[in-house]
Structures are given as structure tokens and as C-alpha cells.
Length: 223
Length: 271
Picture 1 (cartoon, each protein chain N blue to C red):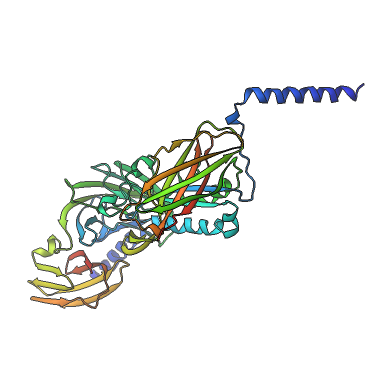
Picture 2 (cartoon, each protein chain N blue to C red; picture 1 turned 30 degrees about the horizontal axis):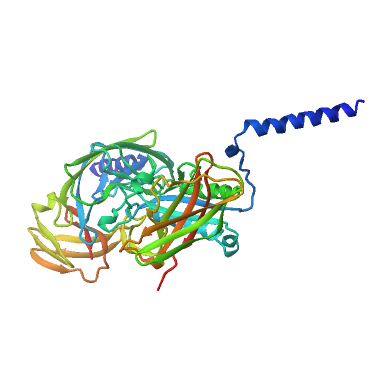
């Protein structure tokens, strides 16, 4: 009886998930309605500039016309390059619509890129995505925290990861799997880590990567 | 009698119409451009772009394709072609003093609410999205003009200066025209944000606007019917520019008709 109930529950959950017209995701995974994301910066020393990029995307399960509305707490800071092929600076709001096919994943390109200095104060971005029948609202807080210098808060309690050039130094309380993905989402490396040690990243081509280690995720630039 | 009356009436009406035209339309308003399908002139395309604009490489590709289409040796010999200038605009890159391409005049040349990559054709199209460039350029390049450049504009390097000279011929009187002389640099290898968000270091930038020789508003340049008006300017060559990659863009702009003609010439290098 318990098995039947569990199966029905899973079927119901699967049905509910497939009934969603679209999902929104960021570099840290799916974005729930009402969520607040905190996005630190990546500093590029070669260009002497800072990027805050939550890598927001819409994955359409159902074809339709999707609208993104975004309002920033500061005018002239956040850029919006998705949907239309043109880039605009939020002053402080913008709204764009586009037709998306079922199964298509479309980057929103809502971010702060190419800043010459850190933010004078945190910038908050209210985003609403709708296809007319479903709506996902969330907040992105752009903060002055270096994403490439360490790992994000949940994993800090369980240890540290530090990138030094092409070496990853780790110190973990529990065993965890470290996985590196390129910006297309393809896995380029996976290692089981335990205790304290280092991983040689010299075989990884230069570029921007996303990593996951246990529950922690982050972005790193490998030069 | 019945046949004579319509002829006399038509003659009288025609005379009155011609007399009316002569007195009521000012000389500088007589030129009415009529488009045909064949390219007959050069057009100016001001592209608004930036090193940090992820969609801008797509704009560069689109404009290069249009340039290739029209800038054939045969067309260029006839003074026909597309003259493209990429104006790197604030918010989307670095200013010149930080090693970027945002020229001091760029802010004054940037229209309000521009969303790169957008462009203006002959300063008459308004801001156009990339997909609309080809259509407007096709129309503009087939619109006859009454203003031509006499021979080629000469741009010569003299030490750390350039000397630019030329002449403009007009078949009408125009008293609302201005002459603009700009410096543009090609083949600059520098960084550019790509559509996938990554930054590449060795992107080849073409059509980079470097500066206005005679100010952002240009010079007053009234034109007389069937007359040649000459011009001459001297302008410093900045240390970071490569003279062999420089070209000079000259255009005549009318308040009434937008850009009436444009020409470009490479800087001649003195060894």
C-alpha cells in the first residue's frame, strides 16, 4: 500500500513538474518563485574589470510569448541584452517579449559586466518572467563578494576551496565530489575530494567554468 | 475651336505652375530625392557599438556583409558605396584613456536611448535594429544626390599631423549644409565581448571612430549651384593610432536632407 502511495505521489510530482510552462535557472540551479539570489563578482585582472553574471536562463516547456520585466534599484548599472538582439542599460526598468519554442533555452542576459570598479553599494534587481498564464518573480542582489576567490556560504561551513592559478587547493570536513563544467554546461572534469589537498587544473583549457563541490557552486576563470 | 481651347488652357496652366514653382519654393528646397533600384551614391552608416556589448559582434558581421555587397571596385570607382563608422558608445566599453575606443566626442554623437548594436543611415533613418539595416541602406544608396566630391579627398600624413583637403560640387544652392571630417581606424586587435558572454583578446575591430577633425557639429558649408567649394584641415595623429590603418571620412549633411554625400580615403603615409 505504501509503495502504491509513494508511486502515486511521485507520479503526481512528475505531473506537476511537467505541467510547468517554463523554468528559470541561474548559475546556482533552478530559481523558484519568490527566491532571492546573491551574486558576487568575477574579477578579470587582464582586463581590470568586474563581472556580476547570474547566468539567468528561461527553459520553455511550452511554446509561447514570454515577457521579462526587470527593475534595478540603481539606474544605469544593470544591462539587459537578452531576447531582442540589442543591449540596453536599465534606467532603471525594461520589459521585453519574445516567442520561445518548446524545449528551447534562452539566456536572459541580465547582468553587470565590464565594470571598472566595485559597486558603490549593493544593487538589487526585481525580475518577473511570465508567459501570460504562469509567472515567476525573483530578486537578484549583486554584491561585492569575489566569487572566484572561494566557494559560496553553504560549503564554507564544510570547508574551503581556493583557486590559485591552475591549482585548486581544498580543505574539506567531509568527502565531496568536485565537478567542473564549461559555460555550455558540459562536464570537463570530476574528482572525488577528501580532507586537505590540491588538484592540478593545467589540462583545462583557459576559459570561464562553473564548479560544483557538494552543495556549493561557483564560477571560476581559468587562465 | 473645341480643339484649340484645351491646348491654350494647358499652356496657360503650365506657365502658371512653372512661375509658381520659381517664386514659392526656396532654392535650397528644390531638391527632392527620388529613389530607384540602382546604387547611385555613397551612404553613411553610423553604427553604435561597444567592446563590452555581447550582441555587437553580430552587428559587425551584418555590416561587413552589407559593405561587401556594395563596396565593389566598380561601385567605388563611381563614388558609390557604404561608408561605415563604428562609434563606441559610453556604458559599453572603455574610454580612450583606459585603452578603449570611446572617443571624447562619442557621448555627443550618441543618440538618446540607443540600444547597441543599432545604426543610423545617412542621419535620416532614425535608430535601426540590425535586421533593418540592409533595407534602409538599399533605399538610401539608390537615392540620387545633388552633391558630389570633386576627385578624391586627399588625406596625407605630415609628421605627427594629417592634412586633409578636397572640394565639393553642388548642382543646387544649399544654405543649411555642414561639412564633417572624421578619422576612423581599422584592424585594431583588442578585446571584445562575444555573444556567449566570454571576452576574446584578439578581436579585430574595424571602422573604429577616432575623432572629429572639425568638431562634433562640423563646419558651416553653404553650397552654390554649379560651384566647387574647397576645404582643408590639419589634425594631429594620436600616438596610439597606427597611421597605416587610418582613413578619413568626409560627409556633407543638410538639415533638410540628412547626409547628402560621403566619401572616405586612406591616409597616405609619408615614409
